[in-house]
Image 1 (cartoon, helix red, strand yellow):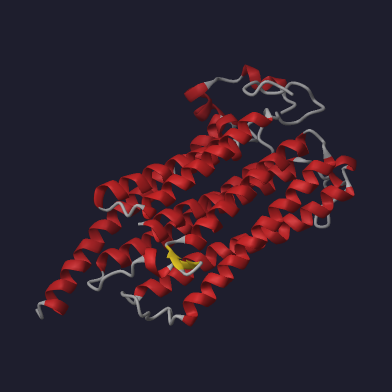
Image 2 (cartoon, one colour):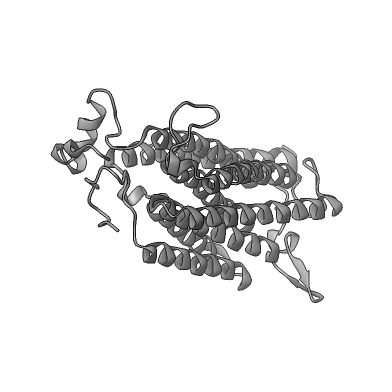
Length: 234
Length: 116
């Protein structure tokens, strides 16, 4: 950051014990809000890991055949069932929104207010589309008789893991969308250029907030990478 | 625009920005990798091939997102260490639960299927 004394600190492996054993700040040059968001995301990683590990344990220990996700999540396109079609589209939508978010962070730091705002808005709309498709997927499965305790395709545990894991992820996306809209408004209004004080804080707004928001959004995409691999493809 | 690896000494700009090319590259790569992992299901690969391909594409995508979109590649080394070492605890937990799942599975085979 602004501290040029960072250059005098040890580099590489030696920097780790040096930073952690030092006074005042452990993460030298890292804005505190960013460090806090990372630590929150670390705890969230543990929550999602527990869900996915319990899913692995449930699926590996059942003596009934696991439902074939290729067929359960197939969608008819012009009368032909395409396996995992909706899930593939959802994956591409989420990656697209992750890319627009990365660019929003870049334009934010370059103080390009308009581009930053447009890209955050695009990200929010991508998130909305994702949640909409997830709602469609849920209602489709519920119509087909999938319940948390039983389903017509195979092992009864399938439903509970499906609703729990994708529901928790969908909640994260929804919360992210709300914050994206709030921050899009703040960017358009010029809060980060003028250093306007926030609603909950007396501290001045700074474009680093966009990077912190971006960290959360990329994390949501990151979790989807694992859900896509383990729940839908495996 | 500044160089990627150097900590910016300019007090007016608190954080470094990166060339747009790197983001577009990673973005494109993520699309291609997602397409490949979808193809794993499309061509119905089975067994070890399926699982190893799924894991390979998954870790590659996760690594790219974390390193470049989440800027971990340029982040302070201490923070990177504090974030990544706890993942070994998750790996241990996975190992424990694999063993537990096998035990439960064989117990169920013996008592439910074979009838004790």
